[in-house]
Image 1 (cartoon, rainbow, N blue to C red):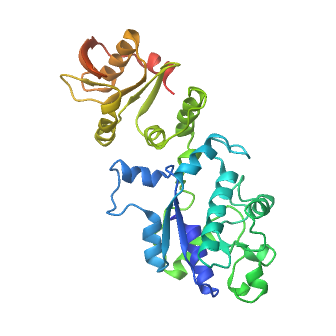
Image 2: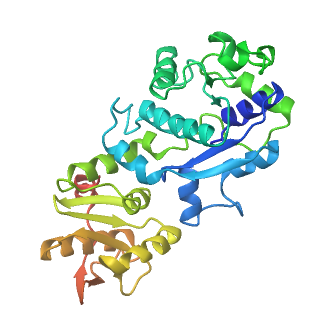
Length: 334
């Protein structure tokens, strides 16, 4: 139960077809809506779309944190990446295998998903759907209720425990049939179709993640702080060992202040502006460059010189700087 349209519909279809349904919502750390809630940029009191959808369709949902095991897979997916840094095939294998384990531990009979044949170019082609079933050990027990009539019957369909006639035969990228089905079921609380909740499909986020991988030490692992920070601010690569993150608004500044306790940070002394973090081992030239970024993105950008206060491990200093020019900014932007 991602909180999107397809998984919500799949849950209701399977329920209508005769099953006692429990949905799973996996936390990976890469969900855009979850990120917005985490940094305080959400207009919902409970900013988890899966919970909203589950409540609307009256189906229990289990929230499962898979991030510890998921992050190593993101760094080295056996089936590779999609257009950006999205390991879609391995992501599906990973999550559905976890669903299989939950099924076996809780006395379930089969696993189902909201996948539609032909909807996604990487993970929802017919050969890929078959591969996922094989690699998760769920051949015959993995139901895709929205496209079931285009696929061989599963064991529960053949046994008559699920009414195949109540399943569907959807195909392709159009969402009109799903939207009509949602109207029939009275489902209104779902993320916009094809809205894209995963940061790993986002081009800008993927550039930052690829840059992080390129500059990690041998044996260094991705962690959740990396994941959270990649979704915040403007990122600049000053040297192979130094990166700068510049907050874009008040919400991001508040979020970055938490991380300022453990690394170099910079703010303008006399003007409102961004909270800026430096990661690595900055030298004098790196501090001067960072000062020019703080000046450029703060309210003192029209002044010839702005005082910038730096705080690092057991030290403080103030550097005066004019704003960096746009051409230079673009040359270091990740």
